[in-house]
Image 1 (cartoon, rainbow, N blue to C red):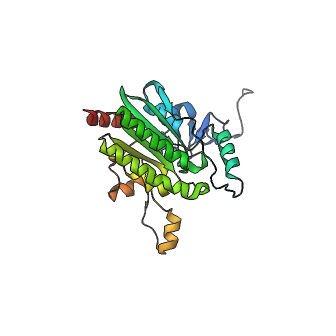
Image 2 (cartoon, rainbow, N blue to C red; image 1 turned 30 degrees about the horizontal axis):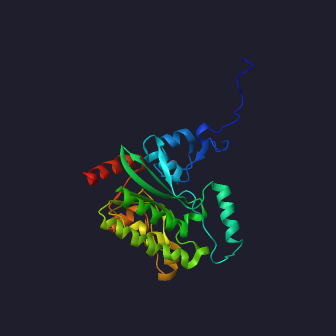
Image 3 (cartoon, helix red, strand yellow; image 1 turned 90 degrees about the vertical axis):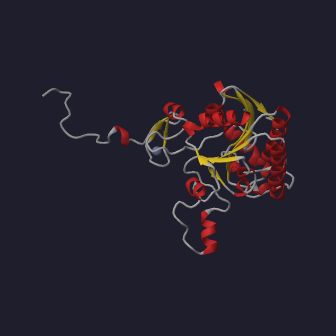
Length: 281
Ligand SMILES: [Zn+2]
């Protein structure tokens, strides 16, 4: 027998069952737990190629997916949050902002940009969940309000991509005021007859659902996203009843008439583009 033949059974893990991988190159699908190579994942618009799970992504990835050649001008990039209440919980709000900025490279939980989608102008405001849970503070509200003004001035359709845990507790009432502010601005956009598309992604909850996320001329969502006001656990404890299967998923919300359609992220650009084309002409 040749010296290189293996007589006894050694390592028995087949390649697709191996879990360890160097950081940054491989990712694990949170749903089916299969390993995803980052390049392939990005090519597939960050949708798992095995189970179609839509991985959570941020503004950087959405801009890449939507804008032609990833070309865009970021709007109001330097807005940052103040600390009007000198709020302290486990740490001070000021420190939390500094830490989140350092960790994510973002100034707040939203970025807005003007670019083109199949040669049609579009302003996109997109939330980032990594920045304090995508919470809606005054910067989020202000950027949406200014984006709407920009859209009215330049007559450009507006796309809002929501991904949020709701209000930003550290800004208390200042956070809640953003709901009224953004809703009022969107009413002006409607009056100017400029299309507003709202895309709800996983998760869209709290004050965001209760204001701008549900005010689109069309409200669309990604598959399997959590969409609701209060979380399922809170509701269950309040009504003391088991919740129906699939409660607060996009599919459930669609069935109950709150959404116009659900869109696979790989089809997103095409669908948005044809929709904008239809509304512009
Ligand atoms: Zn998967």
